Length: 139
Image 1: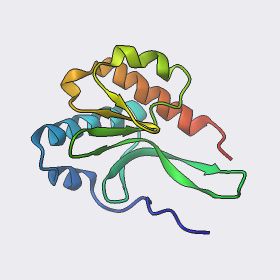
Image 2: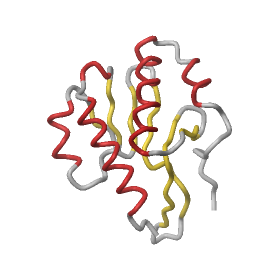
Image 3: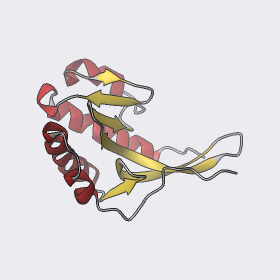
Image 4: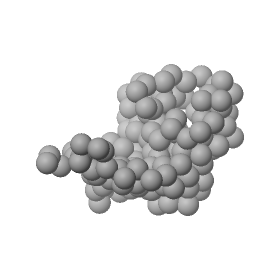
């Protein structure tokens, strides 16, 4: 079975964030680093070359494919922050209208700037996502 390309690495998340060229993305990434670490109680870990994760979960599909993935996390992209693991928890959809300006992707949220969102709602989404991803049985 093929190994997943996105694996935890030893790269330092702070060093990675320092390489982000867009000043808003870099500043928002530092806020997300602190926020997600505080809310989850997890230390940040680089997954692949551009994703910062907090916690992990194991999954196994009926096909037999299995692996580990980050519970919640983010990636500073050129046009927005991609936020992972926040949409699966029960009640997450109900919070999105209160979040502020965002876009949805396939399983992730895109936020152009944290100044356009309610950070209290974002913290709630992170908390719910982390709890759901780390306590549900994905095997």
